[in-house]
Length: 98
Image (cartoon, rainbow, N blue to C red):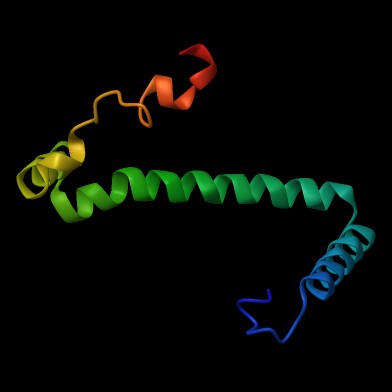
């Protein structure tokens, strides 16, 4: 909130306002309404994932395979995994196992 409000509202004030809004919503509508809102949010997230992962490739490229074909033609380096180095790969991720 500090960044998006250009310093007009502090972090502590934003947290207190958010807490008050959530507490008031739960007090007025009950725990069951909060659970239903969570279910609705989950369905909206699933819709967004399917739309972005399946819908957009079909709209812009004609399919997922065609999207990867276009990617290979435009930037083939983006699909090459780097080899294992000291900073990349399993030795870099898990130095205690090296």
